[in-house]
Image (cartoon, rainbow, N blue to C red; front, side, top):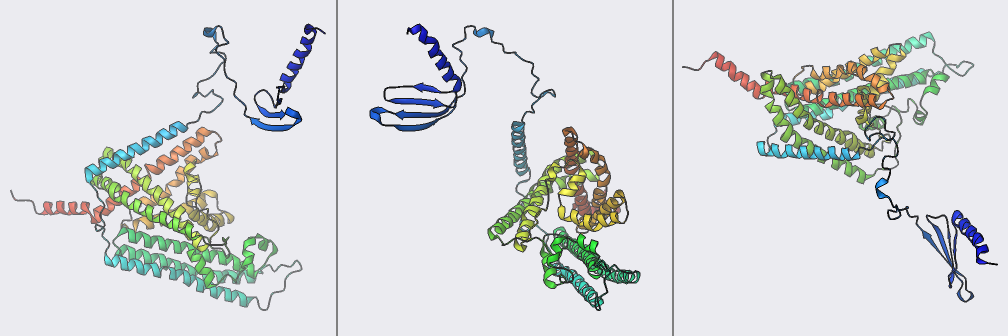
Amino acid sequence: MSQASLSPTNDSKMNTATATGTRLDDPANGVTRRTGGEDGGVVKKTDQLNGNSNTETTISTPEKPKRSYRSRKYRHVEAIHSESQPSCLSHDTTETPSFLGFRNLMVIVLVVGNLRLVIENIQKYGVLICLNCHDFRPTDLQIGIFLYFLIPCHLFLAYFIELVAAHSARSSLFPKPKPSPSGTSSPTEAQLSKFQSTWTLIWIFHALNITTCLVLTTYVVWYHVHHPLIGTLSEVHAIIVWLKTASYAFTNRDLRHAYLHPVTGELDALPELYRECPYPNNITFTNLVYFWWAPTLIYQPVYPRTSKIRWVFVAKRLGEVVCLSVFIWFCSAQYAAPVLINSLDKIASLDYFSIIERLLKLSTISLVIWLAGFFALFQSFLNALAEITRFGDRSFYEAWWNSEGLGMYWRTWNKPVYQFFRRHVYSPMRSRGYTHKTASFAVFFLSAVLHELLVGVPTHNLIGVAFLGMFLQLPLIQITQPLEKRKSSSGKLLGNTIFWVSFTIFGQPFAALMYFYAWQAKYGSVSRQQQHQSVQAVCPAPH
């Protein structure tokens, strides 16, 4: 057979081997086989020397095909523009480009800009940190410690009220009422009237107790505590105990009703978790002490618990609290205080453009201080407290920084307070037939009052800025609410922008500026300047 007749057959075999991805080589010392395609695969080399068959398997990595420039003859005629393509930032593009580089640039610009402000601040004012410059009066410290131990006593008074109510509920079940054929014991009109009258009496005692707690603390802080920090801590403690006591009373009221009149449908509505400690077994001193220290404002007979305490975790979180507290103190004394002091004459002269400039300058440092305080409280301190108490549910906040409107922000940034108002104010009002707007009005009105007490009482200036700042959130929520419902990214971006602008510029910086000016007008340099001017008006200097 001639070589010409063999060529088609060999070419056919070679083409078949190439198409199937198999190459056969027969060297003198063995056979090499490559499988898996042209770009890679498994290479098997069989050694057949002297009749031995040893197989060596290696993995070959696929190689990216390289462009060959030598094989092209006409290099100046390559079709560069071969298809229609939009610009990278155009709306017509099918793939959204990544802005990771711009994000890195913004971080660099932010760091460099703030570093320049740090250098400028130190060059202009020097180091303003002073350990002995704070006006901590001995009486302020003594009263603060006294209030710290006095305020929880009102929570224990609530325990004694509920203990009497539980004893009354136990005695009312003997003799036990006869259930209906369906196994229920729905209350009669007389029983319902008796329960309502008993609850009214219990409610009056609880209301007097928690009102006395809040009013007494407010009176002492207003008239006898000079330093705003000690006054703020005392007022925060009183408000927390006030909210916890209210939750303790309302929750046990419903549990007591289900205990006295166990209607089947209502018993099924109780959470499954509560069966571990049914009413009135939950009315114990140990149960109340745990609720006192638990990082929540919502009372439950039972909470999800962790199996053990991780003390290393606790040490890390407490270390974060200490470091962030020092950082907040440093930023407040070194950066915020000079801006506030330099704003006093601008506010006194009503120089609006200078006031706006001071607000913009104060917005950066106030945002940094607020973020540090948020992390120290909600991430570090509450997690440390939850670990010590083995409190399992640690969802104290959500991703509020991505809020598409102010409504989402208020629902996600402080979940303990939000859950309290939703459970004990909003939901009961809605179940009684009130509209969504009426229930929301009640929630924000009560929250605005508490905000004014929290800020105005320690600074000894009830000027209504904190109240209006909280209460005026309602119309802003109505404005941004349609943006939350939009599915487009532009609407969500606009809502998030409105949230950040109102939060960083017109929110906290303006409130800080107003209360600082009111404080200085009453106790500080503005007050002394006004007294000096009044003296000059009464006794003019001789000519």
